[in-house]
Amino acid sequence: MFLLSRTIVLCSLVAATALSCISAVPQTANTRNVILVMSDGVRWQEVFRGADETLLTPKNYWDSRPVETLKKDFLASTPEARRAQLFPFLWGTVATRGRLYGDLDEGSDAHVTNPYNFSYPGYSETLTGHADVNINSNDNKPNPNITVFEWLNQQPSLHGKAAAFGAWEVFTGIFNAARCGFPVNVSYDPLVLTPSTSAIDLLNDQKANAPRVWPDEAFDAPIFSTALEYLKLKQPRVMFLSLGETDDWAHGGNYGEYLLSAHRVDADLAKLWSTLQSLPQYRDNTTLIFLTDHGRGSSAESWKNHGQKIPESKNIFIGLLGPGVQPAGLEKNTAPVTQSQVAATIAKLLGFDWNAREPLAGKPLDLGR
Ligand SMILES: [Zn+2]
Image (cartoon, rainbow, N blue to C red):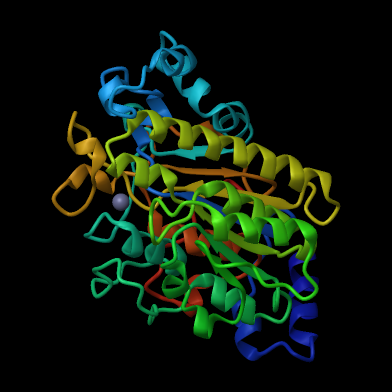
């Protein structure tokens, strides 16, 4: 009954196109909003095993800074306790009330399908639902492919309700900001709102005046806070947020700071989730998806890097939490899942069929609802 009436309503909307009617599928268990959060280059090993004692040395911190405090904070005696120290929200909430894929130790394989294992191809695969072999560099070029965000923003019921925030400047290319029709705020760029708010003005000042350790990527903190402020102000129904420090510190060989930035991302997820549950627009009707664009190497040296020459860096994790997700906890001994399934999963949660628009896209994850 619900499905039928919803379809009729959709097709009766003056602005609804024939394509919208064809594309409408049952909205999943009252998910009205989807928030997609990605943290760049986080290894499945830390997510499921916690901090690696062999990598947590002064040389792998700030080239001599002591690591005693980090050891106390992140090196409990068992993998289960270590991972909960590093990612308390992921293990305390997502893994108990949602689903978590990618623990290879437990027979759950999550991987990218693009052959490159680096960022632009991974974000594009996530957002379009398919690998594109021609996307083979991290150059900031406009993505010729349409993302599921761009398509959802074209749907009458979601028009003007998409937004994207990224620490990395290349998201203007990945989303094709010149074409996509919704705000894509990146890196050190100010978020320009009319009228603005004192909080946004302050965040813009901090981005403009902070040290630029990485010329193409701002620190995570102002990016997260800008996204959270925008969410409270504009209440988007489909929002993207990517944080980048995890990848940058790892490339720099700074395992200590890599752990700390991953721990901050987990705290960001907790703050985001509690904010969502405090707002009537989002409470009990918002699904959160959390994953990474690629993994990293598994050895004492290759953990710093990723790419085609490090085949195991194709392995990722995917976590989901919300009314569209039947709780299953940690996936064990399940069929492999892929990054290319995320785009269609987002659409399905909101009642749309991305596979009808993009036949190359992976099918939605089976979330039991
Ligand atoms: Zn990288």
